[in-house]
Amino acid sequence: MADLNYYTILGITQSATEAEIKKAYRKLARKYHPDLNPNDQEAQRKFQEINEANEVLSNPDNRKKYDQYGKDWKHAEEFEKAGYNPNQQRSESRQSSQSSKSYSDFSEADFSDLFSSMYGSAGKRTQAKFRGQDYNAELQLDLKSAYTTHKQSLTVNDKNIRITIPAGVENGQVIKIPNHGGPGANGGPNGDLYITFSIPNDSQFKREGANLYANVDLDLYTALLGGEIQVPTFDGAVKVKVAESTQNNTKVKLKGKGFPKYKQENEFGDLYITYQIKLPKNLSAEEKKAIQKLSKLKKNG
Image (cartoon, rainbow, N blue to C red):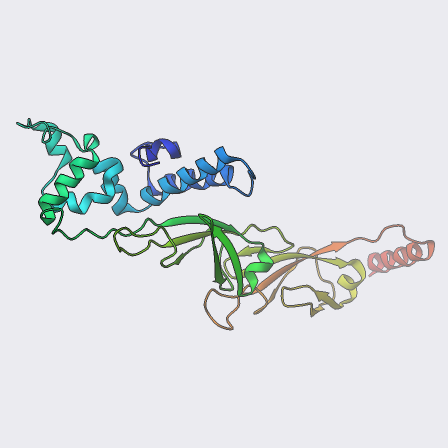
């Protein structure tokens, strides 16, 4: 995949912003994710290309090197130490055939000669160490799973990794797993793994940060006379007192019954409930008489 154009892979231009790169990557990653395309070798190949392109272009330093050196961007430091400038080389004439080449024309033999000039003869030089590539992965969680700290296994480049997911992780949040990226070269360190979490509001609760929002049904009689109801939370049902003459769409805050705050032990947001008053159906004759009597009392009062 080294000869592929990373901008073309993501369907963006070279002037794309970081936000446009992220948007393009997430769209394509969902489309070609192996979980959605089982046994599809072509989709898996495209998914690997998309990840490789994003790993380079989403990192400002790597992107700058890629824009300057193309597929050989990993060797940028060696080129710079040797005083090699591809932009200058393209504009200057060279006396020898080797020196007239642009960075895109360099062969493996050319690199060998370049490294030899930097580090000495092949038998004496010390090989440069290269850090491995960073990997990017997306992990989908439901809201309930994100409520508690738990362990989860995932497969990245055919390797099983078991990670601890802290309670309160947010949708779109990225966490780094050190040394779980691509292997380094010549004894260099491994890259890192960056995991982006996708956590949709697919439950009865809507989440905004550490706060939760929910609609709660309230029968007419409890709304009129007051009483006590059970309200579900992620930590079990809680009793809530309802005041007399509660109106439809009344909002009530349940302090500390929201979502855990990320990496803040025993700190929680709040739960905001909105009452939706439900009118009774199929009234009996006796119920109708009672309501009519109540209506007359209100009119006369």
